[in-house]
Length: 90
Image (cartoon, rainbow, N blue to C red; front, side):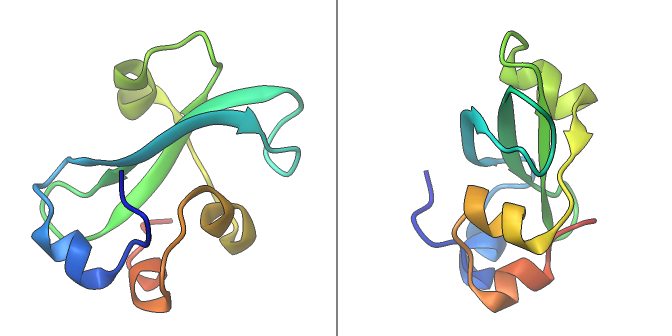
């Protein structure tokens, strides 16, 4: 997975590529653990993070998960520079 997400790395990625994923507790989002996946946009070099219950597959979460909002939690999940963060699709 990506160590530091930059705008150039987003531009170099294949549309729809997985940037990072994980399982963890994020009380800012929901009580208990969640599974999440960060995905590059399909047409433009934007990206977003989706989440759901830990029992769901990453494919299911990618298609049906809820979107993560809030700069602090987004940067906690995916280490990114300011340019890459500016491309986050809210």
